[in-house]
Amino acid sequence: MKIYRPDGRCNASGEKVRAARERAGLSQEQLAAKIQLAGLSITQKAISRIETGDRVVADYELQYLADALGVTVYHLLSIEE
Image (tube, rainbow, N blue to C red):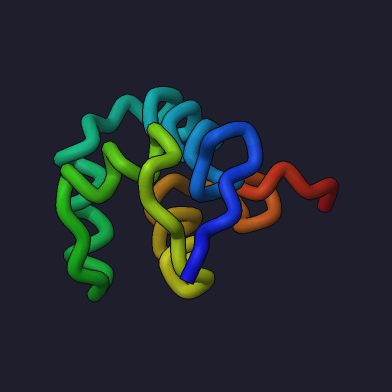
């Protein structure tokens, strides 16, 4: 399967994830731990790859990321709410 990479990125949410994480004062490891406690197995490395656009983000993962960061999925996707 070929992955479409607009602007060289595998996802549309990585930059927003990074900005929200930094605003929340969390490290990548702390964010991964928070998401793990919510029930999704994810590592610091996966968070890093999401933020740099090197990893595809599954739709169900967006909700875990949004909840852990205190934002909406719409925010992570840069969609007007």
